[in-house]
Amino acid sequence: MPNLEVVLLEGTPNERGLIHGEMLKLKIDESIKRTRYFLKKFYHASPKELIKRFTNNTNFIKAVKKWTPDLLKELESVGDAAGVDFDELFFLQCMDESGWCFKAMRESMGGHCSGMGCYKEDDTPTLIAQTLDWNNINEGLEVLFRIKYPNSSLECLVPSIPGVLGLMGLNNSPIGITTNALWTCLNSSLDGLPVNFIVRGVLEQESLEDAINFIKTIQHASAENYIIGDIEKVVDFECSKNKICQFIPHENPRRIYHTNHPIINNDYLLPLDVPRNEDTSWERFEYLKYRLNNPSDKVSIQTLKYILSSHFGPICVHHNFQSPSGYTQYTAIYSLKSSPELYITNGPACLNEFKLFTLKS
Image 1 (spheres, rainbow, N blue to C red):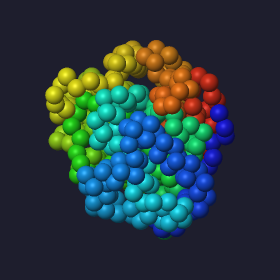
Image 2 (cartoon, rainbow, N blue to C red):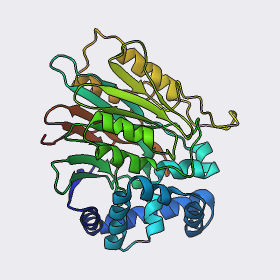
Image 3 (cartoon, rainbow, N blue to C red):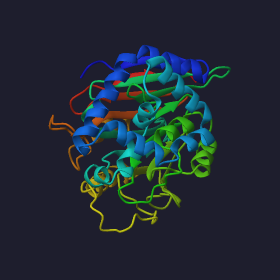
Image 4 (cartoon, helix red, strand yellow):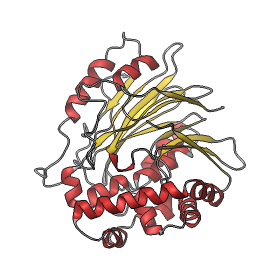
């Protein structure tokens, strides 16, 4: 795998967007061209018309303007600096949303991410981790944003791809967030806030209480599971169009884990016999449960590296080098302590070394 490119974004929303667009202009163009070809090949239709239909038939931009208006400004500046069409750039943000908006994609793709989190225990800080599994159309374009906000000490580390505001991440409060798709099972909303804007919205919060309030206040576009943590603990929410439910594995848990099926949220997508590509979700869930449920088993960063590299489930997913093929694009571990740390691979964890990045508190 190539080295993970790190890009510093700082200043106002417009300034951050201009830096993003200028520094990654060629890679943004490449990502958009790959997306166009993917749409053409998958749907045998004009990518321009498909994206136009997506924009016209959803209220996602309106939701972004309502809930995260600064991120809309940032994205508009990315488009201006990169010289790309805004509708195409916005579509690029909506990786989960395009999956369920287009019926054929919903039935064939689904999500495969695995997430987990552990409360602070003795000398071991709060730990959160996930595999981010997606199709391979943006392989080799991975980027890590280090984001600094004006008139604030807030700083974030946000893995992404060029042109996209963020896929997951942590800040120096510290707050961390992971994602797992649930949209093959639960109801989504054409009026809600897309996942990647939710990620950045959570990372602009400076306390776990504020992050939870944000998650509970907004309308969610995609049915999604979020694991969120701070310096002391982690929480898990299964979110859908009509419900936000906290998943608690058992009484007084100090370990959280989740894959791609709902455990307690029953806001089901109907009819229930819609084909869904979630066949590994229960197996991955059971493996995480086995590895994390025993409170006498100490969980360290190295323990999570082993779990994330596992082919039981499989947690660690390889692709077949055909396009599109699902695979683990990122594996990430957050150590949420006074000087938070990100351990990350671009590519499957069993094949790539974890790189370490640190934030100042």
